[in-house]
Length: 209
Image 1 (cartoon, rainbow, N blue to C red):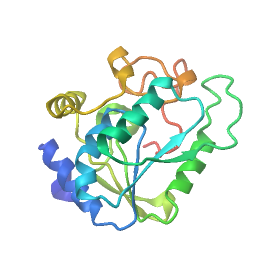
Image 2 (image 1 turned 45 degrees about the horizontal axis):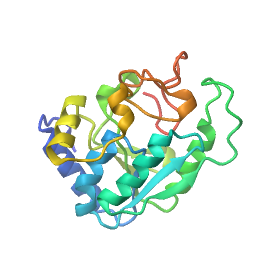
Image 3 (image 1 turned 180 degrees about the vertical axis):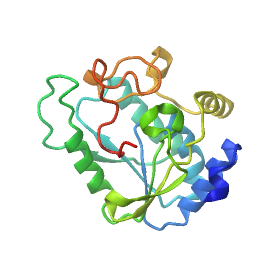
C-alpha cells in the first residue's frame, strides 16, 4: 500500500487499486452516477465482472440522475442494484438530511461484503483530504475500502472521460461538481453545492477526518 500512496501516476494508481479490489470475492462498488463512477466502472467491470454495483435511491434524486442511471446500465452493460433510503423524514431543508436512512441503506448494501469501492478524492474538500487508496473500514467490521481515485483531480477525470467517450451526468455541464438529492444540491466546486447554505458537507456514508 505504501508504494501506491506515494505514486504520482494517477492512471496507474487507479488500475493497481482496482486489481487489488478485484481479488475480493464479495466486492461492492457504490455508484451515484457521477464522473468518478464512470471512470471507475470503465476499468472495474473488466477486472471484476463479479462486482455488485449498488446505488442508494433517496426518492428525491434529480430527473437527470435517473436518466444517467439508465445510460450507465446501457453503456457498461451492467444491472445496477438499488437500496432505498427507507423511513427518511419529509424533506424540510438541507439541515434535515436523510443521512441516517442513507447510512442504513449502505449497511444493507454491504451486508456480507468483504470489500467496497468508492469515488472519494482528496481534492473534493477538507473532509476527504486524507483519503487513502486502500483503507480499513472500521465502522463496518473492518472490511477493505478502496478509493482508487484518491489522487485524481477534476482535470484527470475529464481527460479520461473525453479520451474514452464515457457517459457522465449532464448536470456536471451546468456547474454541479458534486450531485446528490435534488432539494439539497446547487452548483458549486468540490462539495460546496451540497447542503448549500449550511456547514454540512457529508451525509454520514463516509466518516469525516
